[in-house]
Length: 180
Image (cartoon, rainbow, N blue to C red; front, side, top):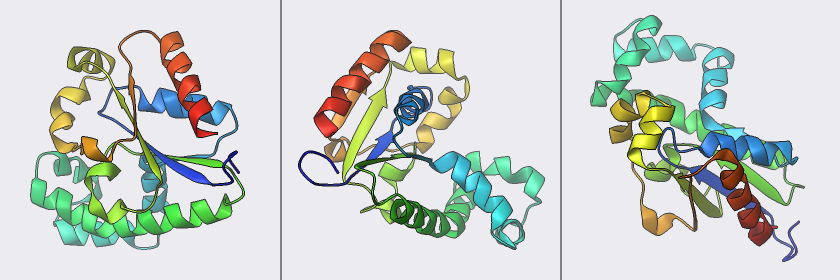
């Protein structure tokens, strides 16, 4: 538990290419449990019996065409309506399995903008970087940033990742001191 006696679940979010995965990797290296929504979703596709088939039927496509969700808003919303309840259930189970930890971290680029995830964390950290920097780090940032929604009123902490990795980790350590 933290010095205040509370368990904290922190959502780490931010636009693609901002450095949120770097922050989460660093926190994980310090022994803090990190739930990566992207990786866990991919795991669910393989572990949940019939999930891929259900998605194919609902979207009217073959699994190999799943990338179309980035271009077709209705298909993306349909996919989310199938997968997000499973992901929420998985997050809850993961949190329960790690209940003795003082700090848990959930990494997601999209969860803050999707109400189905509300209540799964206590605090929100947004990692951000200038647009040009994000695109240079990940070319997909240009095409996918429109899919990400951030309600800044829900953000408790902000790290501006506008320098190098050393500076990002220093900023992360400062935040960590506030949390635990």
